[in-house]
Length: 160
Image 1 (cartoon, helix red, strand yellow):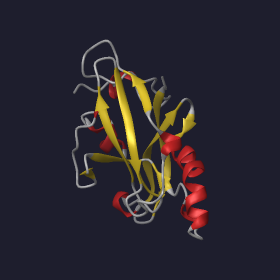
Image 2 (cartoon, helix red, strand yellow):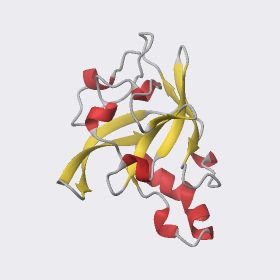
Image 3 (cartoon, helix red, strand yellow):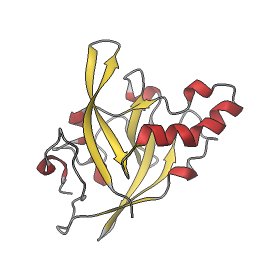
Image 4 (spheres, helix red, strand yellow):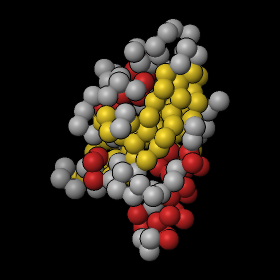
């Protein structure tokens, strides 16, 4: 069982300067850094190692209440590609430019994240990321998380 938590961080935004981003941590490791480790062999084989892990978190309004995306309910144009939604976007700030998409399967006691894909390089395999199984809170339809210092717990327990 994995633990997931979120923190609000900053990222360079090519249009607006600095912008807020939701940093997803899995067992206290930044998901974008884990993704870099998994993607690097494929990117290096393609002769473009700089592309590996070129992801940033999405804007807070995308992942935090009232959003239901983290439980698998798609909500935007970057979602619902083969039943998957973007959990990370491109380092340039445009989610669809270089997204990392995942399929979510909510279960009674757990939430399963699996079938990670980088749609622009479908031959890259993300088996080192999956499956991620998170505990669900005692209330049906919520994801139990440990909130980071800038997000209150009530903001991330999401009702489905």
